[in-house]
Length: 401
Image (cartoon, rainbow, N blue to C red; front, top):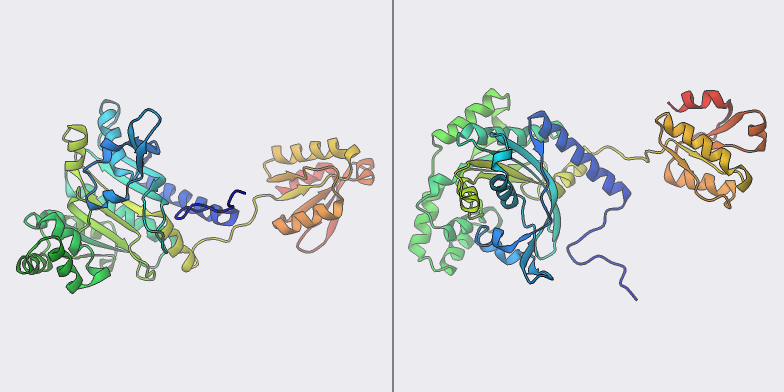
């Protein structure tokens, strides 16, 4: 017998949760398009060669395998690398600067735990073709505008510049990036475990802690100030490192102070990644938002609206002989723009149809029996109050509009 459950790290979303996710997706798209970003979608399956050597030590999380053509392929790990491919492949068809947003599932062989799933949605925005830190500043501004528009009291962009860590080896950067999770002693121990001498580990760590904002950071801060964001919505953080091997230039994470489960998004510049993948010098910067974390934070803070069925009225079927009349009525109501369900079984008693409407939260029920048909009227029942009205069929459409 088949096990009735999902694989570990994968989830189903029943209608209430799916509706909440659709709401967030819609709100994100509104904000992204308000800033001039355009939609992009890429395949779920990509060549393993595309991602190979581009992510860093997290390559161990790749879902890779050989397909039926004996080709090495993998499920999309992130959306940045595939978008670099798109930009290179269609460079002659794209107008630069190219602003894109993408909201799709990614796949990582994580150890399943709270907030960590093997399939998860990310929402990305990126700007291609601009080397100026103004592009980085815009991506950060869109990030803050998103959380402001969703109703959060405060979101904070924590910002650094990976170019200020040029003399720090990648292994040390990865360790320092874990500072908030594991603490200073564990960061130093992590470096030593990777072959970095203790004295060097301390030197690297102290050097990073004493990094000061440069002209690039100040340009970003000026942009955010002029864009109207309060000064406590962004700050410099010297120990922010970002562990992706392709991160360069400005790097940032977005946190919501009222939400304690970690950052809700992270971004960076990645000009070098684009050049390695495409062979073209196309500057790029952008951010990936954690869709699940953003939704969870919004739900915890009461920002997600209560969802009810879109159906305004259930048209019942009084009997098999009157089914055609119920079909005609539901069709007229649907054409008028209302959300209409026709009960899909002419063998079910009216009482059970009313119970269905109640369980689904459908506000009105239309009853079309022999008496109503003889008088060219329809009985409408308000499921909240129990009140019933017998209306002329001609008035019914305006009643629901």
